[in-house]
Length: 202
Image (cartoon, rainbow, N blue to C red; front, side, top):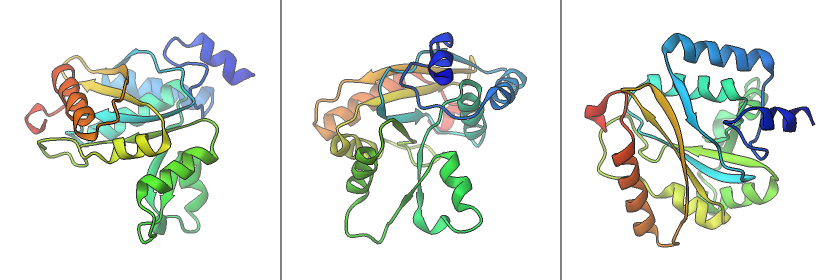
């Protein structure tokens, strides 16, 4: 009940935003953003299950800004990790942080594994960086779309503007089901609307 009330009182989050942390962690995240000079603009979607992509990924600072942003609003964003990383004493920490173990040796592909994970959970958001690297790329790796198609969940786009120091919560994408069409359209939208911390790598 407290989390639901907090969601309604914060214009950035929605009633369906997966939550974690408390007043202390939100304060710490907000302080880091304030010290670095960053702010969050927009609103998160009212969706219980979403694949969230974060772009562009051009700097090590991206991770710090992203973590501070999530902490500041109490957002729990899950992320994929190789299964081998989940060993004592880190297994509970990684799961608490949102880590999802992926079995790369399993005959089932990652899309199938993540589809089952979405089915097994009521309210989860999966964060992915579709570029897969901080270096300059020609396009997005389509894995995020394959997961979204398999799990039958939408894609939400979060971008940064390094010039104005904004984290932009922008668009819940209306997927067509055509991998190439969707990937190119999302890539074009991101190129037009976001500027990385190191634009030369974008």
